[in-house]
Each structure stands twice: as C-alpha cells, then as structure tokens.
Image 1 (cartoon, rainbow, N blue to C red):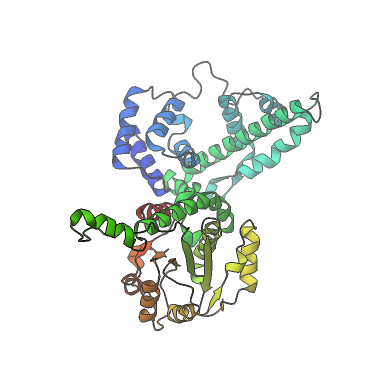
Image 2: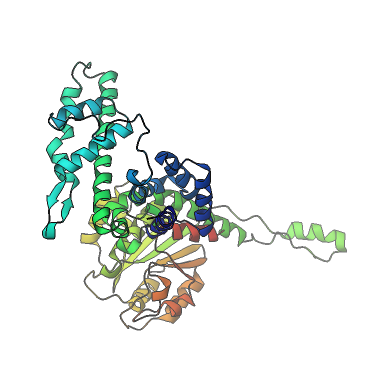
Length: 447
C-alpha cells in the first residue's frame, strides 16, 4: 500500500471512528508530511496528531488507528540504526518473566514494543481453521502475569513511604505500557490477516462527545457524567440570559412623567422598573420507555446535574402515564442509586406502550408549567399511533416562558412509522440531540 493510500485510508478511519476531521485538515496533514523524515515513525505520528487531533479525549482513538495504518514495518526504522534487537534483547531460551521484570524497572518505548512483539509471537498465537492464525492479548498476559511481579520489583524499597508509592506508580505505568504494546501488536497481526479496515471499525469506540445516546451503556454514563455537569451550568446560564433579555420590569410612572418634561409633557420614552433578578425555573418531561431506555438514562443524568443549577427543577417521566420523579434526584446524592430506585419505585407503567398524547394530558393536569418556567421535553416523539393531543401541547408551550424538545433519533428517521416529529416540532422547536456534541451546540444556540 502506498503512502497516499495509507493517508487517505487513515483519515477516513478517523472520521468513521467519530473524530471530526475536515477535508482541509486532511490536506494540512498531507502538507506536514513534506517537511518531516518519514522514516521517523514518532515524527510521523506527531505530525498527524498536530493537524488532526482537536481534543485530548480524541488522542487514544487516534493512536490506535495510527498504529494500525502505520505499523513500524511500513515506516522504515523502529528505533534508528542503533536500536535494540527485534526481540527487545530477550534470549528466547531465557525466562521471559525475568526480562519483563527488567523492562518494568526501566525501559525505552522501543525496547518495550520489541519485547511485546516477541511475546505475542510466542504466546499470542492460537491455531484456527484453514491454516489461519488467531491472535490474543489475554494469552500473553496470562503467560507472563506482570501484576505478580510487583512484590519482587519493590524489594529493597522502604515500605509505606513516598519511595514505595513512587516505585509502585512507576511499575504500574510500565505494566500499562506493556499491555498497550501487546494489544497494539495483536491488532496489527489481525489487520494483516483480516484487513485494516475491518479491524479499524471495531478497534476504537467513539469519543465521549460522539457517543450515541440511544446506544450508551451504564459504563458510558460514568464517562458522560464528567461532560454533563459543565453543560448543565452553561444551560442554566443561557436560559437565565434569555429570561433577562426577554423580560422588562413594571412601568415606573414617576420616572416616565419626569422624562416627559423634556418633550412638553408627552411621554415619548416610557421608563420601567428593573426586573427582579432570579434563577429560572425548569421543568423536564422525559420519555423513559424501553425504546429509548439508554437515552432516558442520559436525560435523567442531565436532570440530576440541572438540579444543582436552577432555583427550582421538577422532573417528570412517562411511558403511557406520567409520574413526577423529582424526588429521586436530590442534589448531592448518588446518581446510580437514583436510577436504581427510579427503575423499581416510579409509577410510569414501564411495561406499557408509549403514549405521548395521554402523557401530555396528564402532565397538563399537574399545573407544573408557568410564566417563569422553561419546559424541556426529551423523547423520540413516537406514540404508537395514539392520538397526539396537539392542542394540549400548544397550551403547555404557550403557558411556559420557553419550550424546547430534544429528539435522540437521527433526523432522517423523523416522521417514519409512528413518529410525530414534524407535528410536535411545529409547536415546540425540536432539535436532533444524539450526543454530547449536539447537546453543546443546542446550548450555544440558546444565546
């Protein structure tokens, strides 16, 4: 494969993995290759990273794909003419754990990569059908068990003090380097057998801000939580600004009369009292049905974060009936426990069929929306062909200060099947919101 083909394939793989790389940035990367030594693999990596990686969170996925598309064998030299032997200085007849212990004490990246390649060749191969080979990281790690070397490596170190802590951190970091080097070489070998494109599609998870809300797992919620709280603060700030700009105080009669003296007693410029500053109130109405269960977990996490930013937040969940779930989200509590209680204690007919029309009618009876309220609806607008209750939604939107609808489905799926996206979107402005990046865009547009 030529360098041009690798460049084009690498940039395409980055986009496929969810990393935002524009055409112009791809051209910038190509220009950068003209001013570096292509035989210097780490210089090549640095040139690509400088032109294509926008956030630190994107770097792990970038490195995985770079190692697939530019393995050391394609860029000339691994560590220069005076680099270590290909097996990392390891005699194949010696105990590999002894050599690993030496590398965990102190080693260069080139030495660690070379040793990892030798160990994958020795322990990572598993026979497969038709004479092919399967490669596995776990068999290498099981054979060498680097974690069990810790006690030996800490011999002679003062126990319980800073010296032990520093030594333990260094060894753990080197174990991680070895694990990463093994995983990289296993992916390289699989790519050689199965094709780079195939392994690239499964090797990298999307960056946290590109995770699809409809496909997130509970483990992803831990990652998302760090992203949600800053966004909740920004959302509160944006809504407060809109409230401030959209509201004038009551007429100040005395100031108006005083100002009219300069115009012959004609009140040409009315004067108003300044509005009383206060935080906006927020009401969240979210679909918690099984069809959007992953999205519901995210929206409830967002609700949890919003409770700390607004003077008053009320949250309601629904499937075919509505229940106020504010009680599950006390500020300072544990979000995992809240979600667990919600699943067992909330009265939302979780096994019923989603009915937006009935939910809007029940929600309207709760008098939760008022002139100071920002209403945020979260759901896919799919109502199982039930009556939509459009008039009820109009009354709710008209009674609120602001109303917004975030839909986790791709826009091209709106209005398909039982979707009422356009009908509901004509009443409450609806935006596609499938990931953190789109949520951030929505918040920015509020200003």
